[in-house]
Length: 238
Length: 91
Image (tube, rainbow over the protein chains, first blue to last red):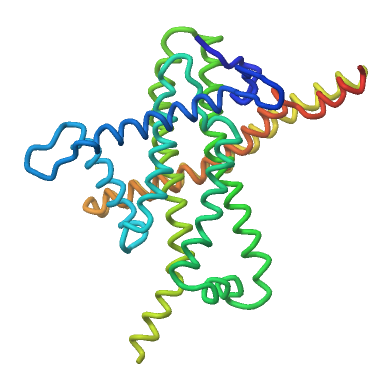
């Protein structure tokens, strides 16, 4: 069952329910589905969490996921991961699950809509100055924009905006192109190739989720740690 | 030919050109990145994990350039703004 036609490039165009100015489209439904799965699973598992030697299988799964995310964040940011785990881990889990469910028939990944990826990229856009100011103060953060000289200010601002747009288009383009490639292959060679492409799509989806989270982490780390190195140099000199 | 046909012809040809020319650079770049990473792994097998991780991230970043071209050509074919404008003007 395909609810998305070949000539529609976004699940925003599939309107399921319409009343005056309220429109429920497929993107909204599937976003809420993914969020409900994540929240319900975490809530059900952590309700009877134990710290003994006997832990349930679900608790083991969640512990493995959280430990993996923390390990990756520690390697990328070279610092304490607890501060960033909630934000970056949520990004990874949401994108990862919404791409992973693509193998379910009738499901369209909400990340194949430009609105979802735009929202996620704006979250990163806001989180970068938030963590930067929180970690090194507003003066030091703003000073970063005028490194090495005053003339570089517009380039820093431009870089900030273009990397947000790149983050948005990258995720959207990868997932949407995967949908379209499968649709075209179904029309050309119905049986074997679409299945192979679906298997490849699982890999692409997870890699894209990983990359989105890692890039967000890299941007946040570069905003909040650039000054720390100089602090350390000063401390060593003193 | 009327203006609608010209819009269709221009959109389809430029979609093909965007995809074809736009994927030359990323293809060369990805091949270069993979070959460098393979020789790095061959020299230092102990660093395999960190090399592979960096390789995946950089491959996705290189690939995103081709993806931008793909998005442009998809927009030109499936959601062409000029096409909709021309249809509205005719009506």
